Length: 591
DNA sequence: AATCTATGGTACC
DNA sequence: TGGTACCCCTAGAT
Image 1 (cartoon, rainbow, N blue to C red):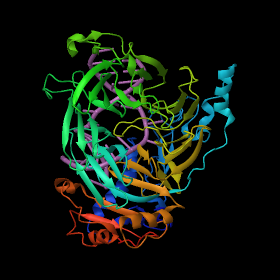
Image 2 (tube, helix red, strand yellow):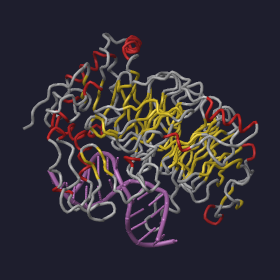
Image 3 (cartoon, chains in turn yellow, purple, green):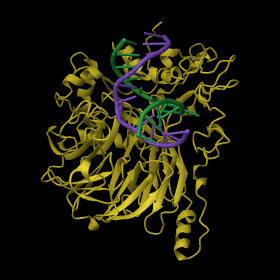
Image 4 (cartoon, rainbow, N blue to C red):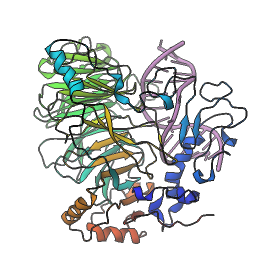
C-alpha cells in the first residue's frame, strides 16, 4: 500500500486524495469523502476566529491541507490571546506556546520541542537503590538495553476492509485457533467477523444496543463461542458462526426509564476477561464492580466492589497464575486481586441502592496491590507468557511496565512518554503485548498526535521495546489517515490488525509478504499469487447494513473476489475491490 | 461547502 | 455537588 503514497507534488487534489480503491466506481465520490474529508476536517474544526478565511497560504501541492493560521489579526483559539495562533500549518501542528506540552504535560515547551518526543524512555532513570533485589531490578532496567529480539520493522497494509462497521471500531479479538479470523466490535453494538486472508469475507451481527466494549473467546465448545460486553450493560455469550447469543448478565433489567434513569443508576460493562482454567467470566462495570459469571449456566456467581464509583476499563487474568486478576480503572489506579480471597457474599458500597450485601471498602478483602497512576488507566495487561510484567496505558501519556515480582508499587520498571491521550469520539488507546515475543518486551499502541510524513499528517502505530524504551517501528500508510486506537498483534503470525474509524487494516512485514502470500493463497485454494507489496481492499458501504447478515459465503478464493469487484451491481450490496495495484492508479479528473 | 451535533467523557473549578 | 473547558477526533445531518 505504501506504493500508493503521494509520489508527485503536482498531483491535483483528487490524485492526492488517497482513495485509490474506487477508480472505476460510480461510488467514487462518496468513497473520496472517506479519506479526503478526514484530513480536511481536522482543519475545518479549528475554531479560530479567522478559521474560514485563513487557508490561503497552503501551497497548491498540499491542496487538501488547509491553513489554520492567518497572517493578520492572529488570535489563538487555544488560549484566546493575540499575536500567535495554534493549529496545522500544512501537516505540522503548531502548539499554543502558553500551554503545557501536549505530549509530556510539562509546561515550558511545546510538543514540537518536547525532549521526550524522540527519546521517550528518559522518564525512568535507573534506580539508585541497593541490595540484591534492587540490583536485579537495575539489571532489568538497564542491563539489557540492546534489542534482544529481532523484530520486523518494515510493515505494510496487506489487506483492508473499509467501512466494515457503521461506527468506529472499539475492540478486536483473534479467533483462538483459526488464524485468518478476526472479530471486531463497534460503537453501535455490532460484532463483525472478518477473514483477512480473503479480504471480502465478513459477517456483521448486532448483539448489542450500545457500544461493544470487549470480545473474548470462551474455552471449549466448537471454538466459535465468545462473549461480549457492552455499554448497554449486557454480557452475552455469542456464537460468531451463527450470530446466536444468550444473555448472561444485564445490569439494567428495567431498561431506560425516562426521568428516572441516569448515569448513576445505569450500568455499563467495560472490562471483560475469561479465566479459562476456572471457566469464569469476569466483567467490570462503570460503578467499579466486578461481576463473576459462570458461562456454562449463564448465571452471575457474585459481584464485588473494587473501584469505588469509578469505571473499570480493563480486566486481565494472569496467564501463569489463574488466581490473579488485574483491573485498570478511572480512579487512577490499576489493582491486583487474588481470587482465592473472594468474599463469600457480595460486597457493595451502597447497600440501599444495590440490594443486600456487605458494605466494604473497595476490594479490601481480596486486593493484593495498587499501582497508582497520574491519570485514569486505560488498560492494564499481564505479560502474555509469564504474567510477570504488567503493562499499563495511562491517560497521562505514559506507558508503564511494572514488575509484579520484584517491583513495589512505588515506581514502574519502565516508563515511556507516548502520545495516547484519551479523547472523546475515539476508542481508548490500549497498549498490547506482542504474545510472540519470548522476552515480553514488545508492545504496540496507536499514536494520537500526528507526524509529518512527506506532507501528510499521519498517526502511526508504534511498536515499542519496553525493555529499552526504544521505538522499534512506526506503522504508517498514506491511505490510513485516521487515528488508529485499536491494534492487536496476532498470537502466532507476523500480523497486526488495526481498527481505525470504521475500517480494519491487516499489516504484514514487507519482506515476508511475498512468501506468506503464496502460502496463504495456496492454503485458500486460490490461484495466482499477488505481486510483492500489493494490497487487497474491500469497501463496504454503510447501506449494506440492512442485508449485512446475509451470507456472502459463496465466494472463495481470488477469482470470486475479482468477480465481485467487477460485477459491482450484482455483488452483495456494493462491494468494491482493488487488487494488484503497484502504483497510484489513474484517476478520473473531477474538474 | 460549512456548520452542527450525537456521542455518553474526564478533570477541574 | 454542578458547570464547563478540553488544546491535533469522527461521521452523519442540516
